[in-house]
Image (cartoon, rainbow over all chains, first blue to last red; front, side, top):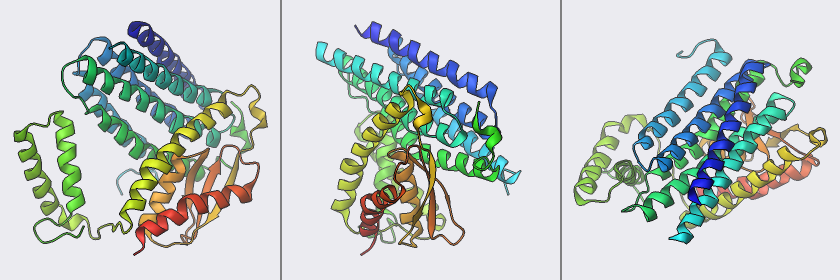
Length: 89
Length: 105
Length: 166
C-alpha cells in the first residue's frame, strides 16, 4: 500500500512541477517567473524526500536541506535585484 | 505496523495533493498577487505533510527515532512568508498591481 | 528568562542545542555535550550582532498562540485556499488590497504580525507604509473589507501585542 501511495505522490508532484514549468516559461512578468522558480525548488525538495522513502535511505535529507536553504537565498536575492537593481548594497 | 503504513500513506497523498493544488493555483489564477497565494500556503503545508510522513516512516518502520526532517518543515515555515513578502515587494515595485496588461495569462 | 554575562541569550542557546541534535539526528551524550558547547560559544561570538533581545512576557499565551491558534489557522487557511483555487469559476474571486492600521510601533510585533498574516487565511502581507502605521495586505477573496481588517486586528495583532508588552 505504501508503494501505491508513493507512486501517487510522485505523479502529483511531477504534475505540479510541469505546471510550474509552464508558468516559468509563460511569465508574463519577472516576479511571476521568480515565483515559479520558488515553487519549483520547494517541489524538488518534496521529490527528494519522496526518493528518500522510496530508496529507504536518509542520505537525501542533506540534499533536501541544502535545496531549501539555497532556494530561499536565491528567491530573496533575485527579488532584491528586481527591487533595487543590485543585490549587495 | 499496518496503522503506521496507513498514516504514512495518508500524509504522503495529502501533502502531494496540497502541493499540486498550489501549482494549479499558480497555473490558473489571473494576476500575480492572487497567484502568490497558492505556492506560499498550499505548497508549504504540502511539503510539510510529506516531510512528516518521512519522519513517521523512518521513526517507526526503521530503527530509531528520526526527527531531523522536522528541520525542513520548520525552515519552510520560517522562510515562506519572508520570500512571499519579498516577491510582493518586487511586484509592487514593478507596479504590477496597477498594470492591467499583466492581468491575464 | 534573563541572560547574564556567561549565557547572554538563554533561548538562543537552547535553540542551538536542539538544532544541533536534530541535524545530527541523535540524542547521544557526546552530541549533547558538543551541542551545549556550541550553544554557549556561538552567542558569545555573535553577541554584538544582536543589539536587543526579544522579550516574551506572557509565555503561556505565547505557547498557546503559536501551537494552538496559529497551527489551527494554518491548516484551515490551506483548506480554504485550496477550495478557492479549485472552484470551477475563478472569476468569482474578489482579490483586493486592504489596509490594516497598526496599533503598535514595536518592530518585533510588526514583523511577526506580517509573517503570521502571510501564513493564514487567504492573505499575504505585501508592504508597510513609510510611516510604519499601516500594513498593506493582499487578500485572495475579500467580500467584506471591514470584517477582514477587524479579524486580523482582534485575532492576531491584539494577542501579539499582549505577548510582547510587560
